[in-house]
Image 1 (cartoon, one colour):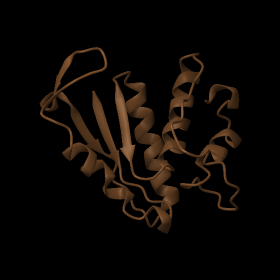
Image 2 (image 1 turned 90 degrees about the horizontal axis):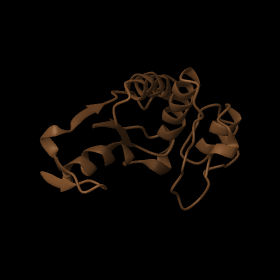
Image 3 (image 1 turned 180 degrees about the vertical axis):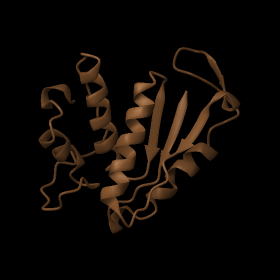
Image 4 (image 1 turned 90 degrees about the vertical axis):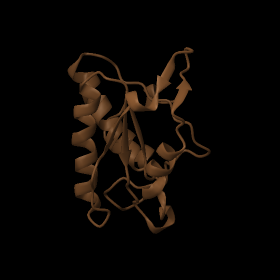
Length: 145
């Protein structure tokens, strides 16, 4: 299993999110049990990070998308941890593209207290409207719950 840190912050309101990946990984115990009861050793996990520049969000989202294509395309279990919610736009677009290349239909389940469908004149996906941008960019809205 791969855990990929994505330290993106798309706005001042999400300041500090870039540190979340390190904080989450620090809390993973040396041994834990998966959802099917299998014991997993922390040493068996592969940790990676997408190194990006939060001052250049266009380039940051391009890097997230390209790295996500590679990781998702490897068919290895991959977990992306943020950063703010905007990372989901780029990872979900990569997931959609991998699914389409494999003649599969993508499906996204979002766990969030709000829809992140705000209206923004910003061309880049941000923390508050990434889901709107995802749908506007071609992710099938009937495949999102």
